[in-house]
Length: 110
Image (cartoon, rainbow, N blue to C red; front, side):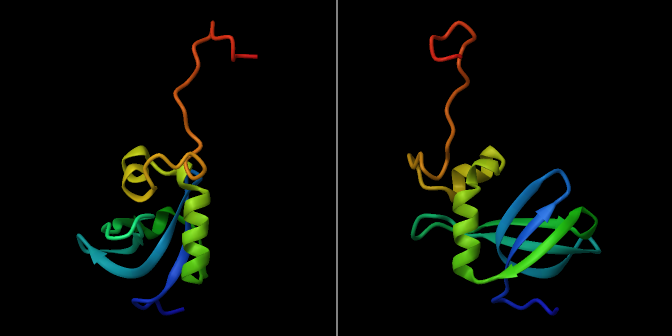
C-alpha cells in the first residue's frame, strides 16, 4: 500500500505502544522511517511528530481520520507523558484516566 499525505493509521510498535495519526514514509539519517503526525485534541495546536523505525513496527492498520482520532483519545493514557501533555485536552479526566499513585497507608487502598 502506498502512503500519501492523507493516509491515517493506527500504528502499533514493539513494547506495546500505539500511536494514531497521519502517516507517511520518510528517510531519516539514511534509513526508511514511518512518520506519524499525532493530531492535538484542541483546536489550533500543532501536531506532534514521531518517526518510527520499520524494525519497531508490529502492525499498521489504515483507517479513517475519525477512527484514528477516536482511538488516540481513548488510548491517550498509554502515551509517554511528554506526548500526552501535547495532544490531550488539559483537565479532561475522561480522556486521560490518570492520578497520582496512592500512599500505601491511604484509606483508599483496598
